[in-house]
Every structure is written in structure tokens, then in C-alpha cells.
Image (cartoon, rainbow, N blue to C red; front, side):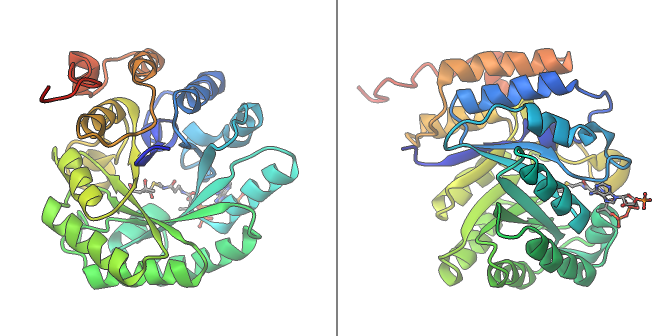
Length: 312
Ligand SMILES: CC(C)(COP(=O)([O-])OP(=O)([O-])OC[C@H]1O[C@@H](n2cnc3c(N)ncnc32)[C@H](O)[C@@H]1OP(=O)([O-])[O-])[C@@H](O)C(=O)NCCC(=O)NCCSC(=O)C[C@@](C)(O)CC(=O)[O-]
């Protein structure tokens, strides 16, 4: 049993803004590989409107082809009721995701840009999505821009806390808090995470930090210290947000899986990930995208002290 549960997000958050369509067979091989090296949660695809996000036009085809592994949660992102209906239809057809994420934004402007709905309308949407899901999935409530919005600036921690309560009232007991454009810092991470854990211990928090400003790893340590045990990451730091073009902000990027695994394991926090497999998989991800990705560990190698008692 590992100390933390990592969700490998390369195939969804990672690929979301890749302009080139990655062949379905390549995605399936990578997702299966992620599960094979120890990821118990893998974000596999999104049931977004395929006209808006063509990269996921193959969601059902991909999930149909994906071999299942015991104990692995395959997540599909859902932004509206139509998305959940597609997830249910796939389950009815004998395949599909066993985990879905339901999206809200902590700010009005981000909600309008990302989901094309006001927060109030999206919360109604979430209630409808929960009903449409028929209790057939593990549900992950996801609050974007939870530590700051690129358009509005400060986001009220009380408002985010209320969003977590609303998910819990709807029976969504896993809630991911997203630092969508890298505005969190360790102090604010600890404050918000600790407040959620103190008031809602029955909710499992998931930390979803982007490395927009190089704060991803320190924020993950802060979340760990605040009691969070579920973390999102993506090989090569791929994905994040299309900050430059559409959403304001600068460099995009998830926290690199290789770097996060190396950090946690160096701290003595077991991730359950096979370390040799990690490095080989990083190379597969680079090959799939045809470029060098953003991971210090992929370039420099794992900490040589891993597996060795640090002070003799
Ligand atoms: C925003 C919405 C939901 C508005 O969806 P909408 O209000 O239905 O509007 P629309 O204009 O997109 O839809 C019009 C047409 O598309 C169809 N349609 C509509 N939805 C679907 C669907 N799901 N699947 C298949 N078809 C769909 C719909 O049925 C209709 O068809 P028509 O009647 O014209 O033939 C939609 O445009 C959409 O899915 N957009 C993509 C949203 C998205 O993927 N955003 C990025 C998510 S990442 C994120 O939120 C951040 C996160 C999670 O990573 C955390 C973090 O970083 O902090």
C-alpha cells in the first residue's frame, strides 16, 4: 500500500491542447502502460464536445479498446449532462470509465470561458450530471482556479469551501482543487486544504496543481503536509492550461510526474510507482509527442539516493 495516490493525467489534461491528434492506439498503449507501472488512477479521456476539443473525439473508441486492470480507476472528464450521458451509454455497452470528474470554476469569468455557463448555471448542471450518472461512477468534483483566477485575481477561500460543501451535499465525496494557472503558494495551499480537512473530513481532497510559475512541487509538499494524499500530475509536465492564448497567464504545464515521483520517494513517501518503469514510460511519452518534454528528472535521472538510507 502506497502513502499517496497519484493520478496520471497525460492522456487528458496533458493532451487537451495538443494540436496534433494523437492516434487512439497510441493513447491506449500509454494509458495501459501507466496502469502497468502502478498508477491506480489514470485520467483517460474527456467526453467534451468533440467539436470544441477534437483530441477527445475518440473517447468511446479509446475506452472500448482499453484493457481493464483490477484496482485501477480510469477517469473521464465531464463538463455537461451530455458528457455524462455518453459515459453512461458506454457503460451500458460494456466498457467505459469507472470514474468521472464534474467541473466547476471558482470564478465567474473562468466559468464563462471554460464552461460557457455562469457558476449558478454550472452548479445546476452539476446537480443534473449527478442525477444522470445514476450512481454508477466514482465522482470527482473539480474546482478550477481555486487559488486565484487569471481574470479576476483573488478567489475567496470561503467560496471554494462552500463549493466543496456543495459537492459533498450532492454525494460527491472526492473533490479536486485546481490551481489552474499557478497562483497558489505553500501558505495558501495549507490554509485552504487544512480548512477543508478540518470541516469536511469525510471528503477526500485531490490536489491538482499546475507548474505555470514553478511552484508546482512546493505546493504539492504543502498539500501533503496539510493531509492531502491524492495528487494529479502528467508525464513531461505536458498540458495544463492554454494560458497564453485563451485564458490569460504565461507558461502552461502540469507538474511533471517524473519529478513528483522522484520528490515524494526522496522524502520517503511511497508512491507505488515502479521507478524503472517510470523512466521508460517518460521516454514513451516523449516519443508519442515527438519532442523533449519538461521534466528535470527525465533529463537528469532519478535521485541516486533512492532506495539507499540517506544518512547511512
Ligand atoms: C462547454 C461545453 C460543455 C458547453 O456545451 P453546450 O452548452 O452544450 O454548448 P456547445 O455549443 O458546445 O454545444 C453545441 C452542440 O454540441 C453538442 N455537445 C455539447 N456538449 C457535448 C458533449 N459533451 N459531447 C458531445 N456533444 C456535445 C450539443 O449537443 C450541440 O449539438 P448540436 O445540437 O449543435 O448538434 C462544451 O462546449 C464543451 O464540452 N466544451 C469543452 C469543455 C472543456 O473540455 N473544457 C476544458 C476542461 S479542463 C478544466 O476545466 C480544468 C481542469 C479540470 O483541468 C482543472 C484545472 O486545470 O484546474
